[in-house]
Image (tube, rainbow, N blue to C red; front, side, top):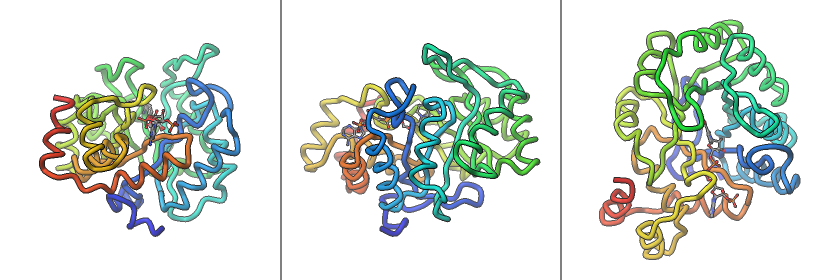
Length: 288
Ligand SMILES: NC(=O)c1ccc[n+]([C@@H]2O[C@H](COP(=O)([O-])OP(=O)(O)OC[C@H]3O[C@@H](n4cnc5c(N)ncnc54)[C@H](OP(=O)(O)O)[C@@H]3O)[C@@H](O)[C@H]2O)c1
């Protein structure tokens, strides 16, 4: 399938064109994103199917596993086809209990960039998101110091573009006084609408918004209204949730995760659904 035939078409991140329908690799690692996948060959098959479907945006991080999803991506897809862009994030490590301790001092950020390069088999990372906040969400405070470290790594030629993750609108504005930001990756989906205003503002600026947990994450979306719309359209609830995101704003890029080739195909098909005004109004009420 040619990239532009995927639902939503394409978006340009800086100078990188990606399909708006991407793939999030996090849950390919073991339970709670620790250790190897239960089905190694199955994980490789999902990644290869993503590229076969025309997807050119894969989201990952050295922290997933740790190193597990990056190594799976490398094993499945290296040498990477020219249009494919693998997006990573830095700002947290993993501990023995599977926790995500903050790691944003210059030394830790440099190490994480190096680890992403090594495990993905790249000489330069196309796009690195600086992840702030904590597991409860964004936290206020200046991001100048960690962002300046990433700007230095960019000048050294190790990073092409910079993005932010798990941030407040104030942190986005602060970052933009320091360096261009091509995307913001925050939690957002049909039922979790805290970033509505930020999405609209970024759309006006031409900056991408990449919702993480687009399907609800570890507890996938469950809503009688969503199921009712899906039943009416003869579609799956997850497909409808993705179609709604693509319709919500042109700067939204999808990175839904799945361990299943069948779900991946189902999600691509679902994201292409045409939603009527009545469908949209019903879906809109879920998160309001
Ligand atoms: N920046 C950050 O802080 C941050 C945090 C979290 C995640 N992320 C990124 O966001 C990406 C997406 O998040 P996510 O994968 O955790 O959550 P998600 O995309 O919201 O949902 C994934 C879950 O939905 C299920 N699912 C997918 N398609 C389905 C279908 N057609 N039918 C039924 N169930 C379906 C998956 O199960 P199956 O495997 O069974 O399909 C999986 O349990 C991650 O891969 C990661 O790259 C970023």
